[in-house]
Length: 301
Image (cartoon, rainbow, N blue to C red; front, top):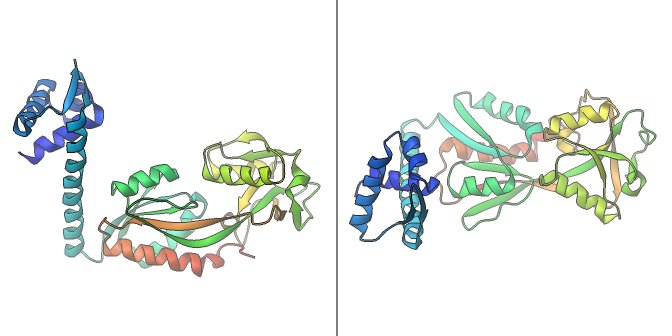
């Protein structure tokens, strides 16, 4: 049994379609079928149900797939470890974050002290982050909801308050605090349903008895404050979106009711995934940044 056979099997299992799998592997469909057939002969059991070019993993195939994935995971872990031992001061860190508004200053600070480190970032939802961690496709995730899994460690970094953001000429702009019931009839601008921040802020409104009239939904969080500034509605804004030297012409108001309008930022990693020295340094930097350095850039009072 060869590693090439196992790699071909995993690709066929991924697509459950011989033609598509062969195209990704850049081999002919008959050659792939022959390779899978040889593997099944060696195992003494079929791995797929076959319906023409469409194939489906059977119970033997599903069990074997899990074992083979572990083999390649261990190989990849070994490669990472050897690369780290060979060049401990360099490295590639793969991360996923749900905080795009702080990324520039956050990563910029780290790279000042580690200029030779390369960072690969993936945009992902919480459920996608769990998958990425479990399959060792990223080293670390920074999220605003806990990521729970058998081998996943999640450590809180900072509690972040959420404010109301309104145009500077709005009737409530001079208020220092606000009860959300006072804006129950306002037009809101927010992320689409399914985004963690939207779920949190919808919950705040529900607690005081109304469903927000979300007149504008945008996937780009950076665009929300621009729309607020232009007077198209009001929105919520997390603390770490508010720079010490803001350029937008908006007002932020503390929410007095409901109480506890906050979320928790945390960092997570797979305890079974080898973390390079660079990744460990980055994890320690994250903890320090959110504990100390973040106050240099953002309003936290």
